[in-house]
Amino acid sequence: MKRLAAYAEKIAAMPEAERAALAQKMPIVTIEGHPLSLRNNILCVLQSPAPVTIVGGFRQWLGAGRCVRKGEKALYILYPCAKKSEETSEKTDVFFREAAIFDVSQTDVKADQS
Image (cartoon, rainbow, N blue to C red; front, side, top):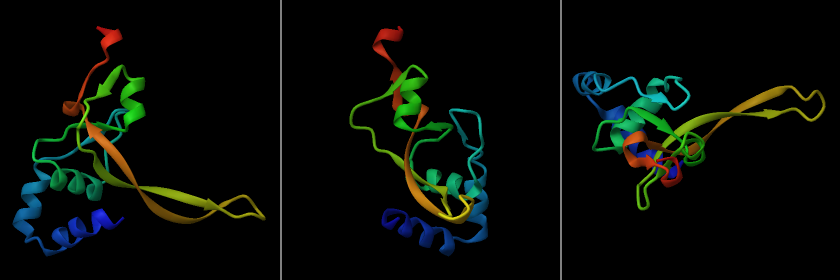
């Protein structure tokens, strides 16, 4: 979470016009076709100098027949986790963790796929 704190401060300090310019670069979707939240869209745009379009985790890309190129820098987003109550086994507390993701432009087709 520490590496995302600086981006959170940057977003908070942005003028409305700059936030609107960032919104023009969205939406970003996952490899499964789900749109990222607005907060995660902004985090991706701030971390990447290149346009971000389709993102996925390292193993998600492998499962899709692509591999992340060696030396590529991950983008970090927040994803929700729920803690289950020990007595009732119901989800009670929700908290967020960091997830490393990569854009499709950071991947290549796996050698055995071509």
